[in-house]
Length: 287
Image (cartoon, rainbow, N blue to C red):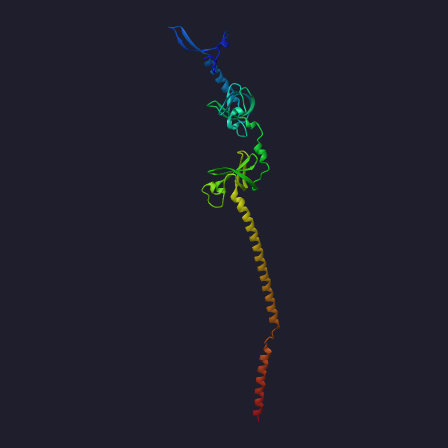
């Protein structure tokens, strides 16, 4: 074992002085088995520990692509390899890492995570590039009513394309005011719908939409207008009634003032009349 990787042509080492480790020895046969790889592995381990302890999460640095595999690409950071997972290569969909990277490419990467115990480093390539999604969603506002096309239906809702390169999710609970067992009961693929933006998460690159709130919002406004009109009419009726009551009261008071009052004078006159009759009667009977 001459190197950490398999070597096809060993002639390149002829004449070189190599530091090796004795891994097997047979004195009876005068046979000694050496390993240069063991020495290199130990040296790489020490170098790896030195490099990994010097790295910080979120740091950006340059590296060289050492290997390209189906699930990503390995990058040599100078003594230790880090992995760029295929999902961290581009903001757009990538079928295979070879579409973007080749062995020997020098690239800038961002340290996403460091596993000290396992000696693993997770890297990101797209984090060193501008995110077009954030630029496209700058003009969107929470509460805005937008029109979009349903691109995909899943058990928990439906995805809607509201701008080029920007999709939002309508959760199954936001599809309709009525209970929905499956999204297909309320919407279908390629259907053009109107929805309300209820949340925008730039960190997770998610837009939450609601068809139900977009519809109920229109109904609520009409109901509110109708309620306001009704309230105004009731207020006008109440005010007119109060004015009429005041007017009736004033007229009643005026009429009461105009009615002839029965005074004590009439009663007194009647008493005086009876008194006079009695006096006249006494005069007639007196001698």
